[in-house]
Image 1 (cartoon, one colour):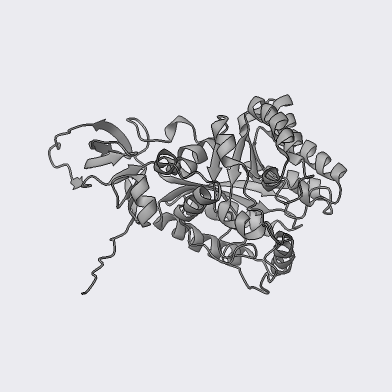
Image 2: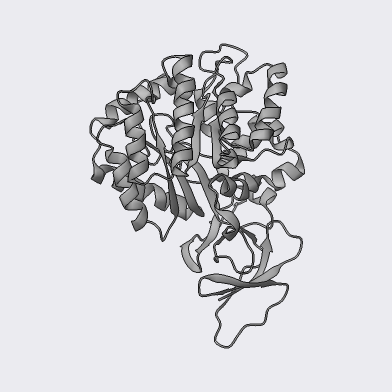
Length: 411
């Protein structure tokens, strides 16, 4: 298959992409069709590596209002709502919702997903169901599973045992939630345990870290220190880090040195954190999103995730990565032309680093023929006009195609 006139990652000129046996075999300015080779003219449209969702909860997706709505809009009421919903979890229920959510993602060009799965459940029903269904869905997306202790490791009965069981069942990464533990001491111990568990099993880590407006929530310093000391480094991701938004600048100046030394990744979730944070504020209200601009300027890897799709923590969401980038640029005040033009990296190359996808991710000869085509000439235009992903190709196979809407203004 030959795709012609592709504008790769905002390039000023177009190139052609040859795909053979599921691989990219050539990217050149002008390629002549081989005998009997099918050709698709992309007409100068933007071509990007496939989108990567670095942070979502597939086990909770599509459950908003069931059995109750989160009326306060807070993180903690969301946890209470989910605890009620967990009572009626079944493998069939989880698999059905995950299938629907992954298809939503696939339609929007997402081909890699990291999902946090609640393991504060003695039956581990959701974890087992997602580990089974991810093989079925591999044609649409690679799913990476984080063992996530929603109600704490030390603060939940047999929390440590459940975490290790989840790892033995096949989780890809170890999670933690230090800010939700009962005490500061529990928070530190939970991080020490999670880091040591990841090191022992050779796994990645992704911690819900300081997802609170409390400027005294300091799990990040412990996580970064342990990542450095244990040599885990960029295998570790700190998700949310909302408290960093409220830290005083003198403390952040000191913290930044440690963060750079540790080489850990960050995932911000602008949609959900601007919704959940600042709930105890009157005015001025804090935005609650971590210091993306400063972290990026320091050379620290930051990605954007959706976090939730229509669940107790977020009553909206449709599986597109566009919305989290669009809002993220606004709330972090990253609105310079180059910042906007290159912001696709938050949900492509940066997110791929979080998932440790390696050199096989990206648009170059020899890599899997996986990419998306957007109905625009560059990402600035795509983001501004909210254009669709018109083609998603995964390992040489077209997995989704969208025909752009035709609009007419009368008069």
